[in-house]
Amino acid sequence: MNDQLREAPGAKGSIPTLVLQNISKAFGGVAALTDASLELVRGEIHALIGENGAGKSTLINIATGVHRPDRGTIRIGEQVVHFSSPGAAAEHGVAVVHQERNLVRKFSLAENLLLGRQPVNKGLVSYRKMVEDAAPWLERVGLRFDPRTEASQLSPGQAQLLEIAKALTRRCQVLLLDEPTSSITDAEFEHLVGILRELRDSGTSIVFVSHKLEEVYALCSRATVLRDGRNVLNGAPLSEVSQGDIVRAMVGRHIELFASGGATKRAAGPAHLELRGVSTELGHHGVDLTVHRGEIVGLYGLVGAGRTELARAIVGLAKITGGELRVAGKPAKVRNPYDALRHHRIGYVSEDRKDEGLILTHSISRNVGMTVWKRLEAKFGWISETRVRPHIAPPLQRLDVRMHRVSQPVGSLSGGNQQKVSAAKWIAAEAELLIFDEPTVGIDVAAKDAMHRLIAELADDGTAILLISSDLREVVQLADRIVVMGDFRILDELEGGGQYAPISERVMQAITAATLAAQPDEHDAIAGSPVH
Image (cartoon, rainbow, N blue to C red; front, side, top):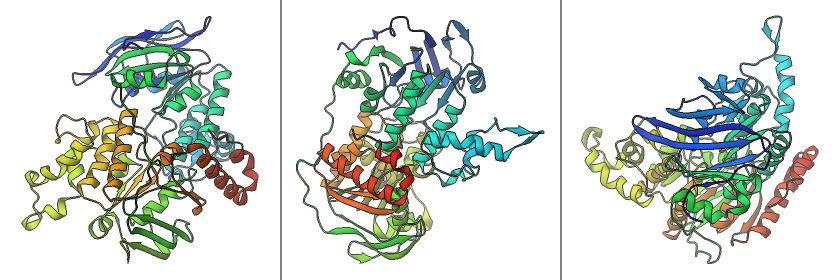
């Protein structure tokens, strides 16, 4: 495929529903979009693809009234429109699920779902009616919770499903999904596929933004690719474009994607992290888990299985109430993440990089350097930037963080580069055990490839790695062993080996069996999810 703009109209007789034509937008003199276009037709699922920072989210924000374009035209059908706000876009039937979750954590699921549109009786909000109205929408996206449950109780993946339910309640004609599957598992993706196909078949037009090309090809009929804010592909039929073509269009060059794993199993060293019959205040009971030096252990399970919660207990963010935690062969009591790093050399790359992994308003230097400040501080706690720089430069270079300078706010970086910074601070700290929780959520193909290479290299260098991921292919590709969790307990343990199909089948069997035992009424919801 030539590296040039390709046009491909929708199906013959198709009706355009949303058209963005020659859209340009700059922030502070830096162009985010230059003559970018997107045409969406009725009853299609259209992929919008590009590297982090390519302009996808900016285009979505313009389509939904968050930003106004500097130049260009927006049309709904044949009508030229000017969206002054997201509310104005919603009035024209355009809804969006943003990559960043926008929930009020102290509100109930029902309140979040119908915020601003609560049912009213005699001038007062009817909480009973709101709970009744919310229940079927929660059920539709697979959130089997009491609608009165506080949103703070949801995992990041479950919060993403709630955001999707919020958009569906608006009964929109155009639905824009910005990385809707970033924190959900294969089974939950299959459930979402069914919802999106129903919407498509009923005439809803859907823009689907994802870095997971297998999802794009499973769902979408056409694709638009942005690179550096410009169209490279414009509505190309996916039946005529290979995944390799898409990757080359995104990055402007051919990249040989990392292939790990299983072909040559690592010679693991001594046990470094050991959980023996561990119980936690979060609900784990009798958890046995071992991670050796120079080994990658994948921790897989459905959203809500207790994987992230277990990681948080290991680093002291939740209390271990029973059993024993051992690090490097010795019993350990970890009080908090600072204690985990200083006394046990444990690092935690959180799945929630914006709220936990990084301080977005602080510089790249401060974010990476905070893990080495204690050992570099001079008299009276003084820390010199000159002393810090040599320790943060190597991990930033190793991860190829795209930045102008280390003094710029980390919040100004693309999502993929933010994730690299989140990992870089633990590499600078020379952690001996690294817990990666959803390390490739919301990052593009090239950044994901770089993260995979990093994790494998760290293990090859002797670091003990606990990898938590909702992407089973990622776990199979990288892990030497795979531990399956469900209902806050260990369900099964498998050897790695890169053979996706048999491992996937056994993983799903373990999850299905455990789920049926715990919740027999949900048999169809879990057992009906095909393995792909």
